[in-house]
Amino acid sequence: DDNNDSTIINSMTIDEAVERLGTGKFQLIVLTAAGLCFAADAMQVLQLTFLSEVLRGEWDLTDDETAFITSILFIGAVFGTLTLGPLADKIGRKPIFLAAASIISIFGMVVASVQSYWTLLLSLFFVGWGVGGL
Image (cartoon, rainbow, N blue to C red; front, side, top):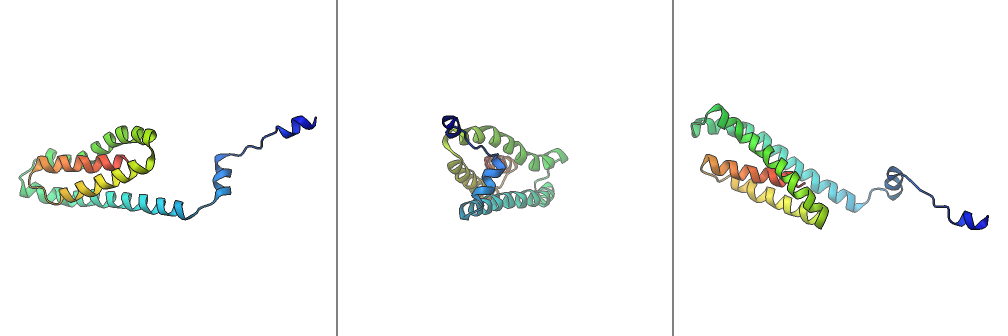
């Protein structure tokens, strides 16, 4: 039965494979990049809690309009997950990660210069859309 012994394949779990490969420079770069993107998103949400109260007075917003300022970011994140996630499955994670980081950066800067409620909502939606793509 020497022929049967040569066809035996050793299998391992995903955890065992990851443990065997270890952590290298690439994993640290990806972890750092993703961490910075999520930190930027967290700062954006924190900023919105303060900004929405200021804008309530500046733009004479109702309670519902004020609450929607933060909500639109999360609505965008849902759409980003539903659109960019499947796209990343088709074309790869790296291009989508770079696109999402760019979308967050560009529309994050746009948020800083908006002059109207609806432009703010649109910009925040796209920030959220980018976040959903991470």
